[in-house]
Image (cartoon, rainbow, N blue to C red; front, side, top):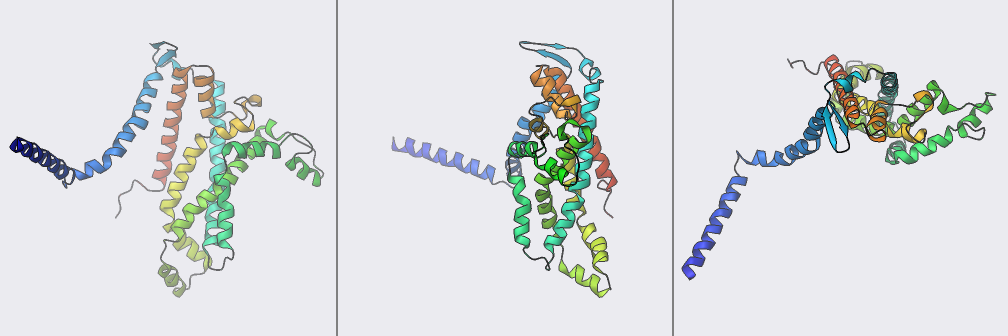
Length: 312
């Protein structure tokens, strides 16, 4: 009896040793470490994308689906989609114009040894990014309200300008959206640029000073080239963020309906068709089209920065 028990225990130890040996194997260990990422990628990205592509060719109704070919994509050729795509493109363009150069310049100032209270300004600029987009959108809706008593109309009155309805015009509505995005995300981009600035060796600046380089030449010849990888990353996530914007518009107009669809975005159209109208097939076609557009724009900008060139 004792001999049998010892044999079982020895067998368990042998199995445990085999598992341990397998996990610590130089050939197996790398696959074990990347397995959580691969599983999460397959479950939370690859499968939803594949399922969405499949649904975009179907008419999806409660309890039944029907293959309809390219009909959902043909239905995209509508005024609503063009309006949504134009609004998202304008928003992305203006956020890129504001949220790339401005945080870069501010980060350079905050990284300077001559800058006083830099820690305070870093915190003050980053705090808005911690604010809920729902709270921020509600506050901005009140600040840019149509009443005489709203903050921005009161500001206009100081210069003798009349009251306007900020969220009723296409230009002023886009201005409010861009100001809201700038207020929320400028601190995040400053952090990205500050991290990159602090990794630049000071010896490069000292060598440039010995060669007679001034402040502008050091910024142009040393700082900007070394910030290129971070700049590409910030532009990429800004393009993605611009085309995926929805919550800000939804909160500002208290829903997914704005006058003449001036606040309608591509994701807003997806929400309207897929969720509000329960047309999941058409909503999937909108989502896949948005994915393709975003990928094409990012590939173009990555290629323009020479990211696909072989290093010499």
